[in-house]
Length: 249
Image 1 (cartoon, rainbow, N blue to C red):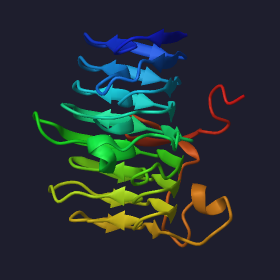
Image 2 (cartoon, rainbow, N blue to C red; image 1 turned 90 degrees about the horizontal axis):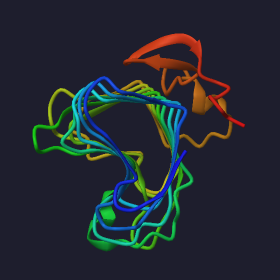
Image 3 (spheres, one colour; image 1 turned 90 degrees about the vertical axis):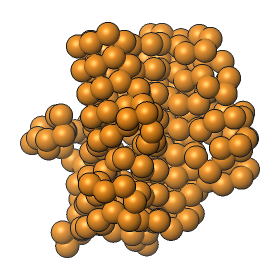
Image 4 (cartoon, rainbow, N blue to C red; image 1 turned 45 degrees about the vertical axis):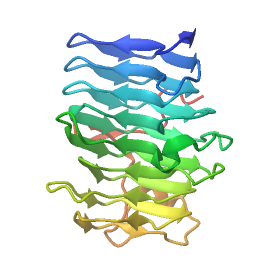
């Protein structure tokens, strides 16, 4: 358990590090403070839990980083920069798989970047490329004072088998950069457009379905929508059950 820090709570650099079954929580609410900063190359964060204030739950700036089966709950963020569960910035060849961003704090202040709130954000610039989201969920990200959290905001990233449910903003805010896509994803009960500003392929997906059954959150309907009953490993869907979630109790 790593808790109660200033600035960045935990920095992971170097290469070929694996962090498992660790809780990261509480950092001072500075404009650029993130809870976990994943740098270096070929590093993995797996089966972990992240919560607290700051710019991002996990800020990724390295190469070939993998984040899998992590749950993130963002608390209050006062000003300045993005307010994001996972922020991919300066990052290349990243894999985010079976990650849940949920129950963010709606008391957050807008600041200058109020429109850049999201469960997951892919940012371009500084050579960023290939941000890949698989089997991930943005759930109950409500409306703060200015504009609601988006599920995903993409610049150089793709979404495959992802779910966005009960978010105050757009489900997925897409990109006009080439080579990226949205496939087999479900966006429901969104405050804004389910799939917004897309210059990217959108296939086999469900937009704002008015459905109440858990079936529509976990399995495709008539071949459309997300399928998140099994684990991903390095972007490949396995037949190993994802549920019950590791350490779910």
